[in-house]
Length: 108
Image (tube, rainbow, N blue to C red; front, side, top):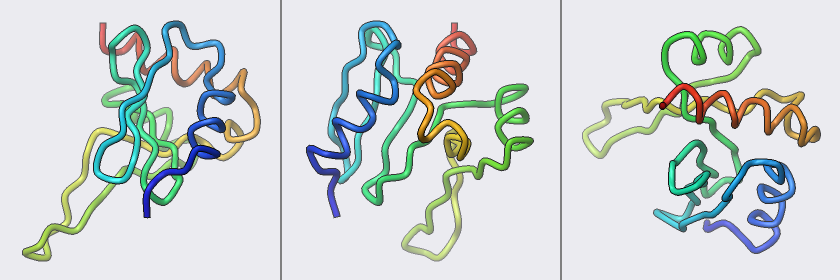
């Protein structure tokens, strides 16, 4: 399953206050960038993930976020440094943008 035009419109609305917001489709999903810096992904299943490690990852875990995991062909599970956007942020662009800005700032 690939992301739809409606999915793309949703994340653009959700992250409307992120400067220089662009995207690139990849592997059925979407990478989201702020001024050419990746800060989030949208999975092919429509799940929004924020790039995070360290303190930001801990804050997301405290909010109930789950780390992105995938099962490899050999059956091993691999995780990536992306965490689900907290549930409360999925219908609140101000909160979503706050998490997005925190993800961007953590990479600088």
